Image (cartoon, rainbow, N blue to C red; front, side, top):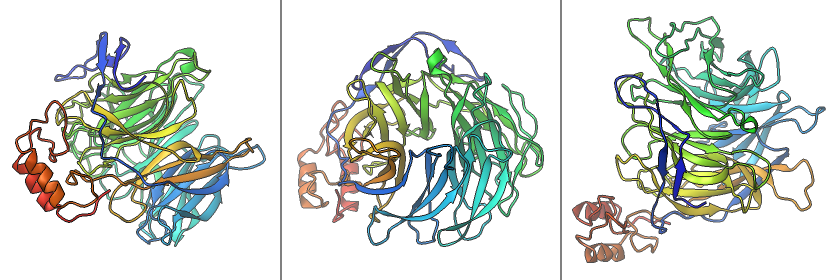
Length: 515
């Protein structure tokens, strides 16, 4: 189904107010469709093929100090006799968008997540990997020892079956900490583990808190366990309430095959309060119930109100065209008080798809995050990467998005990354997946497809690739035009009327190359 209207009576809406409320009511979810014109475009993809097997996760970081973003990819074992691997791909400065194979490091049998942070303050970005099987240590740090080389660093134990890992400074001590989602598939609830960085790359457990409005002080040296929903799939640090502290969002997969829906758990980071510096408490907020089989999440301020919203890719249920599909959802953040999270009901952005991945990045220079997504459809269940352009008016709860571009390549995309790969100061999109071979020859190679951004700046009104006289003439010819109902290219600043603000923005970009 294209972007449009969908009747959903099964979403939970959190009521705004002084506390955390819960409202169950049928909800008409309207994902508004913007006009089809778009400034977003991409050049031909640049493909790097690396190693056999399907990638489980990937992360960006500068591993050799050349200021270019490299990639760390984890690939699980392809058979019981072969361990999983961590592969480092170094950006090729001579061929922007291409990557050279760097270190290949053996890890556990089932590496499920990878993240990047400078844990020891030396030699640049380090890498942390979580493994869904390995014991007694299922969190492993690899310390950067020089230009793209790594040494086995500290290890730690998180919960049962880690499924994802992320890095953030939770206690404001300037050191990157680690947060892990633990699937624990045999339990009705999973968990979240926070590992605090003690310096020198050492990660220690800290005492944690769980519950609605209840919690204990987090100190150092004791195990942290934050209860989550069923089978947490991913974890995402974000400052949900705008108080300057990194909170935690966990995407719970549920059990789609048995009809158990997914959910989002959230935890407010509440440091200070007269406690010792660097000591924090996490307070679990009310979960938000979503649909079947969520696979990925990201956070982005879709409507420019200063609050990060949540975007989720739901897969639904595997099993052919008659099995339930999922959606791409947006969950608007309407929190107004520190440490009290309030989310409005989920909006369906794209209905009836197998959602694999979602990311958020400004691709068309308008200051609003656009959404690269990977989805399969009823007509074509194989995953395809595409981009939705964000046209949401400032402050409006209901997102307005338009299909902008398909990111086609001779690969099957599974994961999304965004960074500037070609040095032109705009955001490009990378898909990490597997090669397409007919007939299939297993194991398929992991591939990275870099899609260089060729979008037009809003000031390039006539799209001749340069901001200049032609754009000025087009703007003056539309002076005073009302663009509130139908967006027009001359409304550069998005105010709804062509006027002085658009003229000033155009003149400030005079002579710039674009597209």
